[in-house]
Image (cartoon, rainbow, N blue to C red; front, side, top):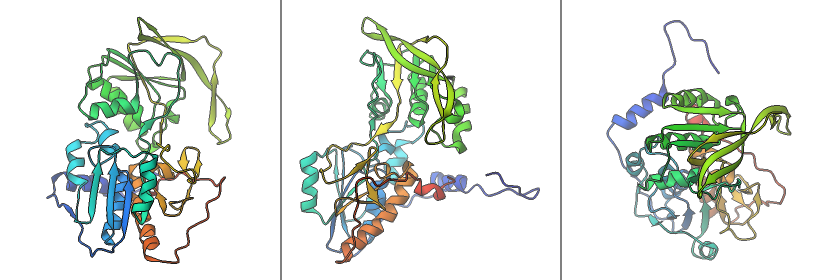
Amino acid sequence: MARDYPRGFEPLNLRGLERAAGDYGAYQPLVVEAEPSGKRVAVVGAGSGGLAIALGLLRHGHRVQLIDRSPELGGMLMTGYPNFRMPREVVRKETPILTSLLGLQLGHRLDSRGFQQLFQDYDAVCLATGFPMSAPVPLAGDDLNGVYDGVDLLERVSHGQSPEIGKHVAVLGAGYTAQDAARTSRRLRAREVTVVYRRGPEHMPIRQAVRQALVHMMEEEGITYRYYLNPLRLLGEEGRVTTVECQPMQLGEPDESGRASVQPANEPPIRLPVDTVIKCFGQVAELSILPDDVLLSDGLVLNRNGHSSRKGLFVTGDIAGDLGNDGAFASGLQLAEQVHRFLALADYAWPDIQPGERIARQRPGAALGGG
């Protein structure tokens, strides 16, 4: 919310000052020295949430085994963002924690049996795997050559690969992944990039505080938006995508959430010529490794303050309903205190999680950086 300040005064830009300190100040490695507690904790996921939990637990002297499918620390910070928005060298420099209490098991993909074994080998298990996969939203023709999922595309580019991107790209969706995929396509020498979204600019799933600036940045890079178009199917020739067929849309009555619904307009479908399509319809968690007694709710792990329905299994980050990397890190630090009490207290009261409970999605880290 805008505030009125006396003439000649303005608030300090703390975020900018902290960024300058991080960019130009002397780097201090993160060192943790603590007396070993004798307790051992497995943390699955080495992104923002997993690193925060590990840091909090290490400060209490607990041994932590950090497990991740990626060969490097950072999780989606390393693979889900383009390098121009999240420089790899900065992440590599700032994520390591120097301590004898931390073990790393990177490049290791757990299966359900391996996950079950963790409960035998450790005193507690923390799950912080985030949303590493594209949402499986089928679209007729998406098996054609030249069609990518946004998360997969960004991950391939982050690993140094150069996916074959044509000159005319359509990005379907308008969230953060869509914006990153569009800007990445321009850097892969696409001549024309169009973001196709079934709602209007004011409805894009991006924080209002940065929405206008991001759209302006995209337009400066030559990326265009086509609003109120819903992709119906993809058409191709000789096995490669050539066309996105879209239905014009219009706003309707509010839905159950109070948000205006969208419905087909009384207009015929239109066709956009393309040679590359990037689907960005959201992201989901990898939940297939979880035991049957871990309850789920709307694609999240059902939990109460980070406690799952299975005693000894804590969850944080996106899979627990915490939004964003800032939310994952803030909730991870908070959850580490809960895990510490669980390990220290013989009479720790584990909550009784019942099917049907609701998870309130939130951004615990909003207070850390301007909402």
